[in-house]
Amino acid sequence: MDRSALVNPERRLPVVALPAVPGGEKEPLRPPGRRASVVALVHGGECEACRAYLEALASRAEEVREWEGRMTAVTEEAWGEAALLPAPLLEQIRLLADPGHQVAGACGVVIPALLIADRWGAIYLAHEAGAEHRWPTPEEVVSALRYLAIQCPECEGEAY
Image (cartoon, rainbow, N blue to C red; front, top):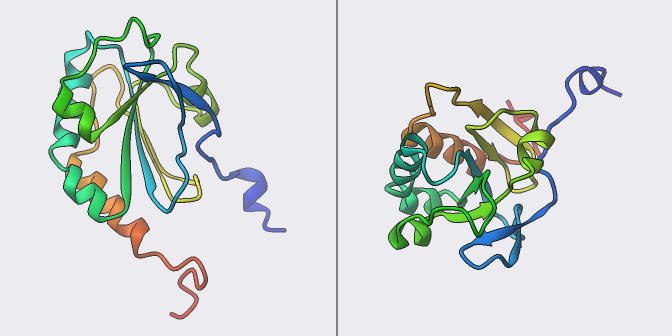
């Protein structure tokens, strides 16, 4: 056994279903399929910095889909209380509610944070934005998705 796995266990997105906003129907955080996950853990609808970041991410939605990514915003407010994002934004980023902070707790991050996980749920990037809301740029998000999309799980770079 690789001892590094004992010291630094691989973090994964939790297998949970959270209420969708709007509506409240539960949806899996990790949807089935081959897509990587971009998960923004954001403050409630009143946080302008979080909303602005989601708008910046939504502007790159076509590139995210091109590199087999799916964007999800997880708000800390209950679905009935969450201020709704504009309809065009909800078409690009699905919004789930997690008032109990299940996702942040399972991933070991503090809200606001950005998680990027591969198609199997292994977290490739976990970035805490902090009180200053210093997020990775949308270009960095697309670059991370591009990297994940071209990885070969069979060889893991062994050919070089």
